[in-house]
Image 1: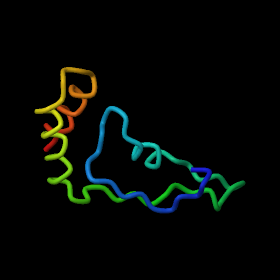
Image 2 (image 1 turned 90 degrees about the horizontal axis):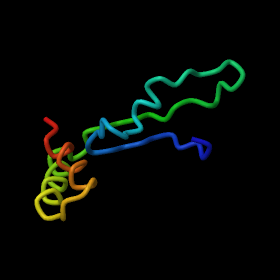
Image 3 (image 1 turned 90 degrees about the vertical axis):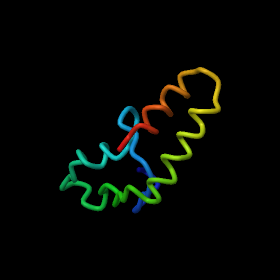
Image 4 (image 1 turned 30 degrees about the horizontal axis):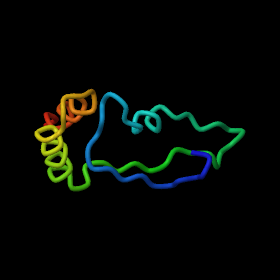
Length: 76
């Protein structure tokens, strides 16, 4: 945020740790009118990204990361 990123694009939301909720609740202060949340665009190549998580889930050893990837692979 301090780097003044103006646009963020992502393929698949991550309900457990995703950052899009940060921008959704961002309040712009009258003291810092230039300090605004980035424009966030999700769903870029969504099916392909979800497939990457499916492949990882299917090949990775049992771990927390594999469990997390399974939740992302199961997103609609």
